[in-house]
Length: 327
Image (tube, rainbow, N blue to C red; front, side, top):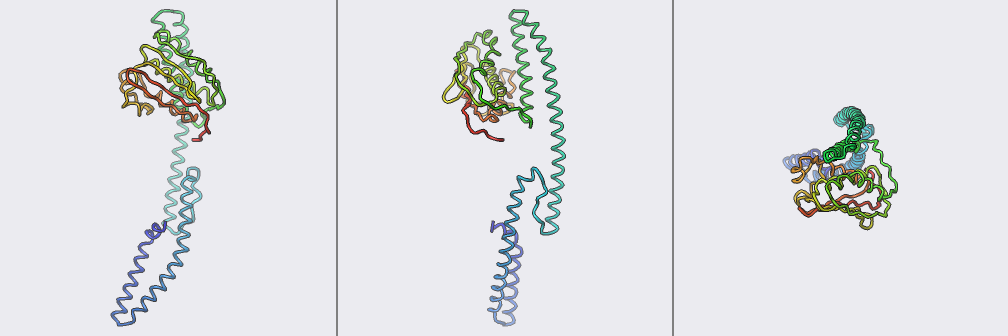
């Protein structure tokens, strides 16, 4: 910080030594004792050090006030340190103006976001009505065509839930209900949802009861498990999907599907990334795993994926209780 202070006052320091040099030259030309210049310079330097010491302390104090204001200015801009002159006052006025503009924009964006969230929430509830009506009609027709259409309806419902989840994640009113839940009960809900796809695709489910309680939010964790199961079913043409629990509380979902290319693995949680298999499928949105990672982060869980092409994929969701993080 000393270097920054000297750098700020480099013109004054330079002028001081220039004046000392000028006096030394004049005294030498008039054949006056040059030592008097030295004494005068030393005395002036002593006074300058005392003055600069007090000014440096004030400089440090103002620097710390401004550093603390970096976080505080997100809430208010009314605690600036006292200005030293007209230029600093002008700078503060510019910041006040920018802050007011920012607050106006934030308020407008918040209002627009709330309107959009309300619209899509109403839209989601409205669209579920014709979906339910179509499901009732198709359930009365037990044939291959109706079963395929029921799966497509289920996929539509899944996409609707993804839209709402995507919007709610960044909402300030996201309804997390953290408590201890029976993990087996949550997983069984997801399995029942996709039971018809297991049967139609003749994929074997390896599953045993999970005697475990986890600290989580049931609704949000269920969404994550459903997404993982949906992907496993989508990319598994034959074989099996297993759901197991590893100590202390890691939920493992493995499949014998087409797998994920090694070069795609580092990016599978990026928003919109589909990878080679996703592009070949033509139905991948690249949003599902992105939402899973975001949700797990909010719940203080971790999710990881290992995979090998033409062998299968394993998704691990670590649910072990830790101190909850505040984002």
